[in-house]
Amino acid sequence: VQAKRIIEQEHRSLAAVLHGMLFVVREIRYGGSAANFDLLFAMVDYLENFSEKVHHPKEDAYLFERVAARCEGAGPTIERLREQHRAGGEKIDALKRSLARYQEQGDPAFADFAAQVAGFAAFHWDHMRTEEDVILPLALAHLSRDDWALIDRAFLGHADPLLGVERGDEYQALFKRIVELAPPPLGLAPRR
Ligand SMILES: [Fe+2]
Ligand SMILES: [Fe+2]
Image (cartoon, rainbow, N blue to C red; front, side):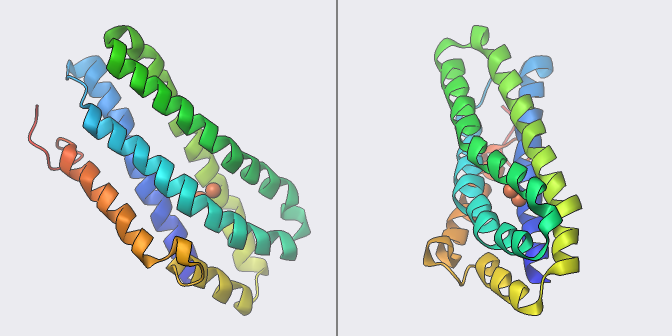
């Protein structure tokens, strides 16, 4: 099923950025690196724009909607995941505010930012794991061919012009910017 592959790929991209942020925080804490705020803001932007504006709305409108309709037992898990989608925006705002404070105030604000990154990464990983380990297997077991055709269209970007292919290019460009700004082993930027 194409949509399953796309969802897993989108999760890998999000996980790469979460790992990247944790890596950068560790380099600052233990490696004595200076914070690269262009990179950190690009990472937060990617999480905000891609997961909040594209990935989660598609899951809510297509995947969760179909699984809830076909599989009654999935109700409580889907409700919890939808609630996490709603909470995600507020968590990213808090992360962004904490990053802005770190940029303004420097070292005294670092510990809060590091804790925000760790908390957000754990929250997001747990969320994605539930989708992959619980929801996708239920979808494979219960959805019809027509259900999947609908979800495939959405995730391939053909169902909703707002979530379409052009937007996909925009997010790839954002991801590419992160790779260009990040030092090895994460990305391609020269070490600072
Ligand atoms: Fe989700
Ligand atoms: Fe997801």
